[in-house]
Amino acid sequence: MRRFPALLAAASLSVAAAVLPLSPASAADGPAWSVGPTADASGATRANFDYSLDPGAVVEDSISVRNDGATELVLDVYPADAFTTREGGIDVLTAGTASEDAGTWIALDSSSVTLVPGQEAAVPFTVTVPADAQPGDHPAGIVTSLRVEDPDSQVQIDRRLGTRLQLRVSGELVPSLELSDPVVAFSGVWNPFATGFVTVDYSVGNTGNTRVTALADTSIAGPLGVAGVSAQRQLPEVLPGSTIDVREELDGVGALVWLSGAVSLQPTSVGFGAATLDPVTADFALAAVPVATLLIVLVLAAGVVVAVLLVRRRRGARAA
Image (tube, rainbow, N blue to C red; front, top):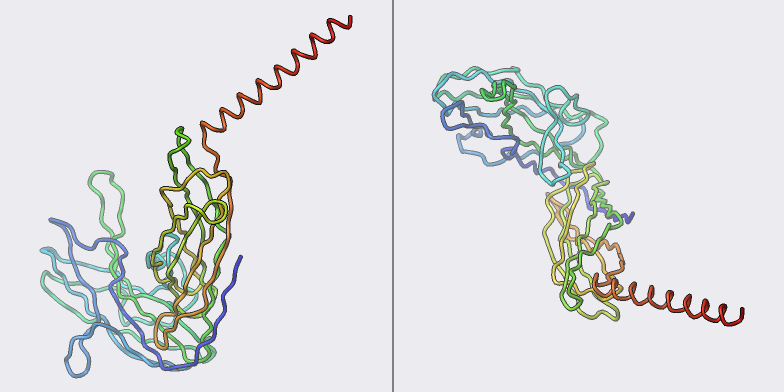
């Protein structure tokens, strides 16, 4: 495993709030609703929650929930820790899973809200940062949930929509990113003159205390760097404590017997004081022999073995 550490100066908090893509909260002829921040004290619409939080701080705020459907809604409302899924999306813990971090800092005035069609209501909440809270990002969300029964399968479906709270506590910020050793495989073709493709699987873990993203560059080449192929992608935001899995497919790779390459990440911290950090690299190598060529070599080798055995047998017969 490769580890990347870095230090950032402590700064005031900027907390982003966005609609969490938990699952669709609307259907063609079914319940539909929306969630977002309430207007600020001046009545202006807010796109984000924006706080500056120190250990021990208390903040009161509220989310707005609107019934966009044609039927009455009774929604459960609850706070929960947020995380980055292995696939790279942002999600929150389900209602039955206990939070351990910022989800426990949020207290709602109500655990449910009832809305007639077209009605909008504010749900107040209070964020209380523990006095011994560690510096850095503490992701959480406030979720609205509706359990509906699937008429086809008779199974209850939990439809959720929420607002993300990215809470940053003041203090020393230490971004830290780990890149696993890549697992690679070459898939060739029968034609020894055609190219194949290489799959490169690796994991990226955020072991620091801030959000991190990275530009990933995966490259591979034959001996002496000939016939190089590369691909770039922007990795999603990885929350502290989360790990994502990445698969890169490099097409047009020649079967040049021995291939070597590397995964290189250019990390960037996210949030106030964001900065480009030192790159992280993991090397890899693998054999890439054309299938047809390999079979020809095996046939020739088998022929040589058979010929040697026949010659020895004839010599033995003559000597007898």
